[in-house]
Amino acid sequence: MIYKIKMNKDDYFKISNKIISSNLSINDEEVTFEIEGGSYNILKRTNYEFKVIESLKSKIFRFFSRYGLLITGILFLVSILYMNIYRVSSIQFNRDTPINKEIEYRLKSSFKRLLCFDFCSLNYDEFSKDMQKMYFEYPYINVTSKNNTIQVYIANIDEANYTIDTPLEGNITAKKDGVIDSFYVYSGKSMVSKNKFVRKGDILIEGNTNVRGMVLATTYDKMELSIPKSERIEETTAETSRYYTLSLFNLNFSLGKKTSFELFHTKESLVFNVFDFFAIKKIEETKKNAIINTYSREEAKLMAQQKIKDDFIQHQSNSLEEILAITNTKTEETEDAYSFTFIVKKYESIGAFSLKG
Image (cartoon, rainbow, N blue to C red; front, side, top):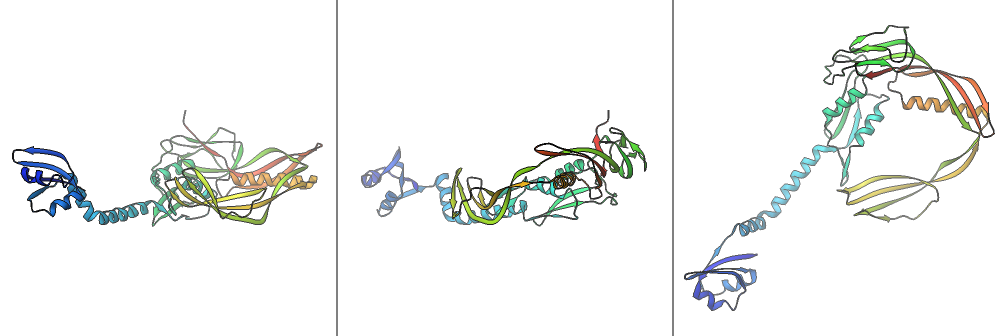
C-alpha cells in the first residue's frame, strides 16, 4: 500500500536516507511525499511528527481491505439468487400431444449450461405467441416458468374459451384435396361442411383480424417407395465404454477412457461448464456391429409400409390424425431393389395458414 505523507521539511531530510520516497513536493516549510509500507513502518518508529494524507485510492483500498470479503460474499449470493431465476430443472406438459417433442426441442435449444445447471433466458410470452402462430390447430398454447420448471399448457380442441393475444390475420386454406369430416373453428368464419370435397388452395376458415382452427378430412395419397434387396446396417450391442472429456480453451482431454471401438455410437452430456472455456462432458460410447441384411419381397413391402407410418407420425400435428389404410397397387422388382406403389388413405388435418391477398 502507498501512503501519502506531509511533514516538516527539516525533519524529512534528517530521515530521508532511511526511507524510499517518491513524488516529493516542497511547499515552504513542509514537504509532501509518498512511501510504501516498509518505509512507512520505519517512519512510524521515529520521533518525528508527520501526517498521513489519505487519498481516494487509499480510502478505497482501506475500505475493500476491511469489507472486501463481506462484499464478495454478498455479490456471490446476489449472483446465485439472480441466476436461480433463470435456472431450469425440468419441462412439464399438461398433456401428451404430438407437438410436445417439437416444443421441448425448441426450448432445450435455447438452454445454456453453467456449472452443473441449465439456464434459459427466453421471453416466455414471446415464445408462447410463436407457438400459437405455428400450431394454429390448437385453441391456446401458453409457456411459463415457475419454481425452475418450464410449464407448457396446450389446450384441447374443446377448450376454446381463451382470449388469444396473437392474432393471425389471414385464412386457413387446404394444403391438399380431401373430403371434410370434422372441423373446429376457434376464431374466424367456417367455409366448410361435413362431407364437402375441397381442393388444394380452397379457403377452409376465413379470418378477418384473427383466424384459428383445425379442419380434419379424409385424404388419399399415391406414394412410391424403393427398398433395396440387401443393405448394410449398423446394429447396436450392449457393450459400452464410459469416460469423461475435459475441455480447456478448446483443448480436449480424455479422462478414464479404457476401451476403444472401431464402430460405435456416441452419446455425450454436459456435466460442468464455465462460460464455455472450461467444460466437463460425460461420454458414453456403445459398440456397433456392421451386418448385411437381405430382404424378401414381403419383408420389403412391410418395411415400405412402416416407413410410411413413421413419416406420418413424424409430421403428425394432432392425436386425432391417423392412417386408415395402406393399399399396395403395384410392385416391381429389379436386380437390386423392390419398388412399391401404395394408395394411402388418411384422416388428417389439412389446414395451412395463408396471408390474405
